[in-house]
Image (cartoon, rainbow, N blue to C red; front, side, top):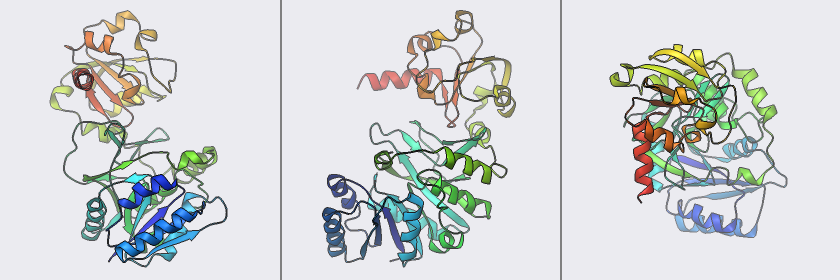
Length: 362
């Protein structure tokens, strides 16, 4: 045994049946921390200990406690070389956990490593770590269906929903900052590890399903103090690495075109996008509105722009906001239009239309 599972748990008994099944024969100790004690959880932890023969220690807290503090408490109880931070709204194969630990052992200078996280509803990618742009952090690859290259993806920061690091590094860097209540916490720790010279990665060869928000939605969330504190502490050291991630996705064929850039994203600096990407941008069209939900392009972009022959580079915060504009995109399917979002996705319009058609035919 060489790893300890750190599990924060405030789930229903029914969900815990599914969750503990994922760990039913894993040869690792588990430290389970809950601020919602129940007889069912006590029974489930006891049963796992009996089935696996490995310690499953339940720590019961008497009041609502932050994710950061719960993990810090668990880390001090852990007895193994590596820690596996695991939200209890994760489902995965046991081999995924073993692969993460194996890579952590073999990768010199590793700070933290995570698998690819996928949405259980449709199997699309939820996160391959964090990328940054204009004082925002984004889950890299969110909504991606295209395959990833089979090599470790280096990140400034990874997601704590499911990740692995050494206990020595966790404790040596002070654990998670307990100022954060339910946001930024573990991601901020990985950022500190990276700043100290250690490397953070996503392993594209292993994956897990994350029922995002299943636990956090049970708590009242107010993230503004966390957000301000995070950027005040780390804003100067964070590299805005969005463009470097996007540039890796751009093919020679894509670069051969000259584009009209239409900014439908939340960025306030569309000229910076044109400057940072290795693309020929002839003109920038700025839409004054800022969108948080679906965007109807016909409602905010003139016909003269939508019907022009020059390839259009559509910039969105998340491509899913504009993906349903199939009437427009189908009329431009023979164009060289490109869609890029702030999560680092790069799609041609024909790829998007074909993907929708495949899903619609199922």
